[in-house]
Each structure stands twice: as C-alpha cells, then as structure tokens.
Image 1 (cartoon, one colour):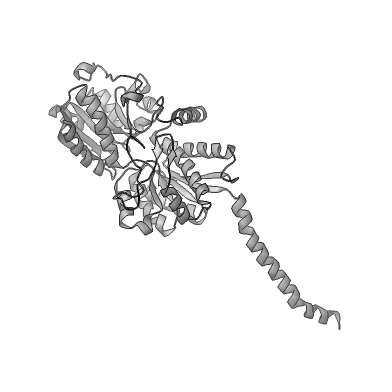
Image 2 (cartoon, helix red, strand yellow):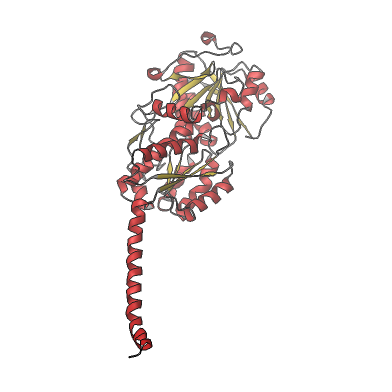
Length: 421
C-alpha cells in the first residue's frame, strides 16, 4: 500500500479521534467554566445623581467583601456597572447588553420607578433576574401578580410606595400628632409613578391618625420655581407639609429655606438621605424630616453601622437610602446562588423567594407569589419597619422610633410649631 493509500485509509479513524477529542473538550469546558468563572451582577443606575450614585458604589463594596472572604464556592463576584443617565431608554439598552452580551447572572437596577417598569417586561423576555434597590411604585409588584410566569424574575428590593406612606404616617402619629398636636396637612409630591400610590395612601393614613389633608398638590419634577406652590400652601395655613420628592432634587428644599416658609417639611425626600445633601443645599435642609429604613448612626441591625463606616471610609460620604439596599442585594443574590447551587435564572428565582437574610435595613423576606404584591419586601416589626430622621447642624439625626432615636426634634427659627421651638 502506498503512503497516499495509507493516509486515505487512516483518515476516517483520525477524523473520529479528532471529533471525540472535540466532544470531550466541549463537555469538560462548561464544568471548568462553571467552577471558576465569576458570578456577574449588572448594576444599572443613575450614577451621576445624588441618590443613585450610592448604588454602584455599595454594590462594589459588597462584592469586594464577599470576594475577600472567598467568594461564592470559590467564585468571585464581578460587578458590571452601566450609567443609565436617568433614562428608561438607556436602561433598556443596558439591560439588553447585560443579558445578551455581558452574560450577567442577575441585575440590580435603578431607584426610578419609570425605569424599573420599563425594564420589567425585559426580565421575562431575557429570563434575567432583576432586583431594584430604590424604585417604589406598587405597580411593579402588581404586574408580577398579573403575569407571574413571565415577570417572576423581578424582585422589589425596596418598600412599595404604600408601605412607605404607612411608615411615614406611623412616625407622624408619634412625632406630629402626639407631641406637637398637629391637625392638618398638605400632601405635596412630584408627579411620578412612585408618588401616585404614595399620595393615595398618604391621604388615607393621615386621616386615620387625625391629620386632615386640606390640599393635595402634584408638581412636575422639572419645576424650578416653587414660589407659587409655597405661597398657595402658606395661604392654606396647614400645620405640616407631607412630601413625596425625589427626582426634583434640591430646589424645593433650598427655596423653602430661602423663603422661610413657616411650615415643616415631613415625609419622603430621597435626596435628603444622602449625606452630601447638606452641602448640596448649603445647609438649607436644616430641620427637614425624611423617612428612611436605615440611616447613619442608627443600629437598625448589627450590619448597619459597619456598612456605613466602610462606605464612608472608601467613598468619603454616607450612603443614600438605595446604597443600603444595593449592598444587601449583592449579599442575598450571592446567598441565593449558593443555596440554589446554580446561576440558572429559574433556580435563582426559587431561591430568592425563600430569602431570609438580615441586612442593613432589617430582615429581608419577600411576599409570596399568591399575594397582591408578589416579591415585595415584607414590612413589619419582625422584618423591616422604618425610621424618621431630621437634618440638624449638618447631621442626619434619627427621631423615630424611640428605641433607636439618637436625638430630639427641633426646627429653624422660621418654623412655627409650638413646643418644638
């Protein structure tokens, strides 16, 4: 047999050996990759905003801590950040890229409800788990109830607007009604998805605690001059303004101080949760009361103060409200992956639904799929309750509940509220 004939005869066997080797390599590759490749968590956030900047920072801090402790079964956590510039359209593009190109295993996304609502359908289309650290609209979880099989990949890592309103009213009962004998208020909120259920619940729960809502004002988040709004409120002579402000930024706070509006601001002010807000407003935030679920100097759990200290040391300021939740979310996503033994999205959903994790804001548990708001945080004394803080002399001081209070309520001289002066 010639050399050529021998090569032709041997070709099928060589081809079979090559094919076998290739199959073996393909079978081995995923096991090797699964055991060594990083767990990727995408973070889509408003990185340039006062509140949103804490989200990627806190997520990275959590990942670094987990990695320093050995990772998840030896696998490192990798944070891939996307700045959405507060745009729903940019957020959708970032989510698509995260899922299809960067192959993330989960996404932490946004403190803006409109952004999360835009992303929610994509979680089902791309079968990618998403947890929000700050969006509040009840519609997010109501959507899951309507189409669980498709939208089960969305988890609400912050309180719903209704829960936030109830927490605000609980604080108002003790601080405003019982201590200051207030009887009337004006609900004043930016016109946004998250404030629609917030305001509706405000009006209900304020009435229950004895504060009559004498007006309900909604303004565009693009508003720059609050003079007409404050003039109208002053003319109605309420005891307090109950706020729902976030995306409008510093303007209402600065102008409230400049115009010396003699009515306290009490309620939700997302930007005020960030320690930079004092400088951002040149101290105009003195006396502003704002609702939160964690805050500097408040040991909500044994993990709260160590997190604040580590965040401050690394980034030079204290986290905003969604920094606490973003930090917790990296930890309980990692925990869910460990418990699931997999990064498969459906297995991760099942594991997240069984979350029972003590984080910086309390004990994190999610409501069941048969509830009206599936995958919402459970709110209550045994899980997550709430705080009411006030800006005093450049510091965020917690006033409520009394068991974790580290200060007493006081107001600037232009505020007229009887015994608080």
